[in-house]
Amino acid sequence: MSGVLFVCTGNMCRSPLAAAKFRALVDEYGLAGMKIDSAGTWIENGLKADKRTRTWAKKQGLDIKDHTTQRVSGRMLSEFDLVVVMDSGHKEALHTNYPGLNGNVIGLSELSGHFYDIPDPISLSDEEFEAVAEEVVSLVKNGFNEIVVRLTKKQIQKTIAE
Image (cartoon, rainbow, N blue to C red; front, side):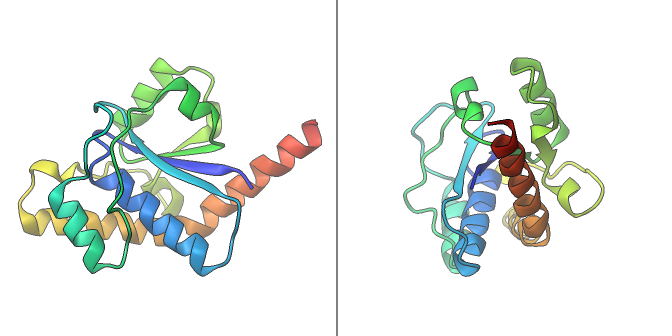
């Protein structure tokens, strides 16, 4: 099966949480062979996830202890059939810097209904941070089936094209 890349700005909060939750759901439902990762549009490589993110994830049973940041690249994008972003700025940045992604980019909120920006929690209060973290995880859970369907369709299209 193909893969999904979750993208936010710094790859320190939203996208690692989304990837960890999606990975947990894939494991829970016994789906094998799916590539899952996260990246940021504006971050240097190799930084640890935000401390609050690591603490919150651990409390939720999500594993991000070995996560290090990585900046999105054209090579990376070519390895995934679906890119899930957190806000309109990410969509714009990806479409501007990597033309040809077409329908491969979708907003996380869009998977469960209408598209809206999920705020970057890095500079928010602890309470606001937790609300955003909970929203991200909830949106991944609610959009899980849609992601799997989209990835399955992409895989079928690739197989037919071959």
